[in-house]
Length: 358
Ligand code: PEP
Ligand code: MN
Image 1 (spheres, rainbow, N blue to C red):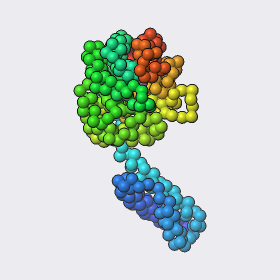
Image 2 (image 1 turned 90 degrees about the vertical axis):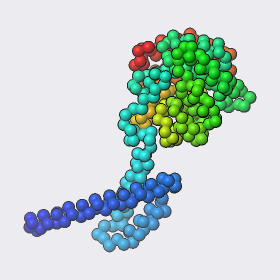
Image 3 (image 1 turned 30 degrees about the vertical axis):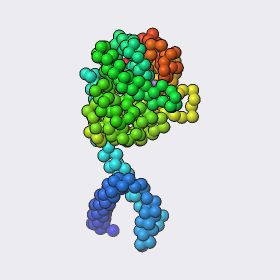
Image 4 (image 1 turned 180 degrees about the vertical axis):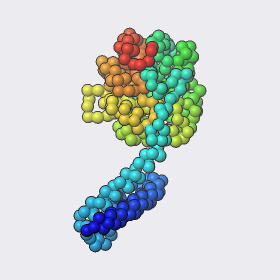
């Protein structure tokens, strides 16, 4: 074989490579089109019956020199790569994803920013019980330099016979106290019909774990101009959590904060299992701020400081914790709320670790 023969063959190979490149990308574009159709119809993307039929058709026409098993392997790789292309496109399309928006979303709550790199705190009682109870907590919260007060007016309780919250009266108490102490209010709304009223009283609408997939509530919260804090569902995967967030943002409200609050596992030592790795995953996958609720995830006062330290170390944008003037008589979550001296100690331990100058 002469040198020029070799060169000729090589240039033919180069041409075939270019043809293959074109064909593979052409196939990719077709697959993307199919992906869009499937996305709309939410049909499962992977279709083994269709793959088998395609493989059979290809292999039946094989005239060599490749063996069937080799071709099967090559085509399987092509199918796989194209399926991934569909899935990538689907993910890319999520408005909450980092792929869609690289910069962090900064949520502004009554002048306070969340997601700007500084670590914030949200504290307050589990439920609003009275003006005096909320005011006592607000005073302590304010003293610690914390600017966001939480409190439940509508309580989604496991038992229908347990305290269900003061409702609108609870929101009114929160607003009065927040005005007096110049704090922002975060409170849970459970009924889509209450969102419109709630925006007059709260600075952040909380959607609780039990309602993470209440899609009508998510859509309603997405349609108002008010920051939303979305908690991870009791048994929700990160993917389900991200998609729940997408419901809100896709309705036009990008002022969204995510909150990891523990998930249900077989472990009974804690009320829930704090999925600490969800924090960096959510920060990588989405551009939204991520808080960690140490109270509901652990259900144990003795674990609040170490879990909050872990959350700060792993890069959470803030910590949520429950505080009550007298937890022993609290109408909900009596066993896990801190009293005021415990809260003062909690903040004392965390202030040197968080990057916010309190
Ligand atoms: C709450 O924060 O008041 C609450 C009920 O928490 P979760 O929805 O996470 O259980
Ligand atoms: Mn609670």
